[in-house]
Image 1 (cartoon, rainbow, N blue to C red):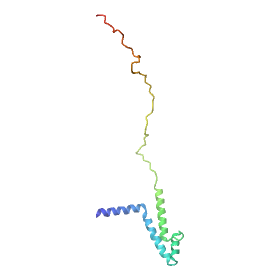
Image 2 (image 1 turned 135 degrees about the vertical axis):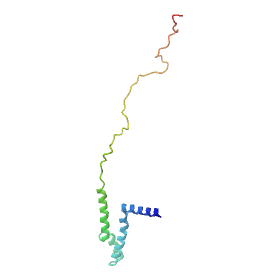
Image 3 (image 1 turned 90 degrees about the horizontal axis):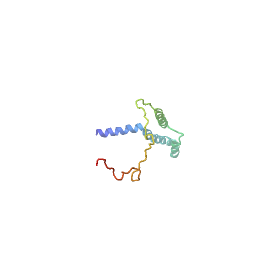
Image 4 (image 1 turned 180 degrees about the vertical axis):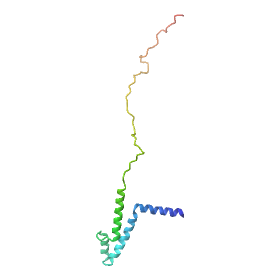
Length: 126
């Protein structure tokens, strides 16, 4: 039971921090305006006056001001702070290339290497 209450509370807090409470309150304001305007005029004119934007009620004005003040607060609070503890280092992805030249060595019997003398040398003591 406590876990369910905690989850519901968490969902409500997240929803209020995002701001959909103004979107949920706007239909209430529209319904109130339609009821008030329909007392003095036909229903079609009351609906037209409600949604034309020229006849906002007090609640609509309050919702509009609150939404704009939240947007201003969000844009003002986005400043970049310098982090003095973390220093940026240059990342070296590739090492510098140095061309090395090696002497050519041929493998195989091409005659470049000296062959043993024919006939083999004999020792003088023999």
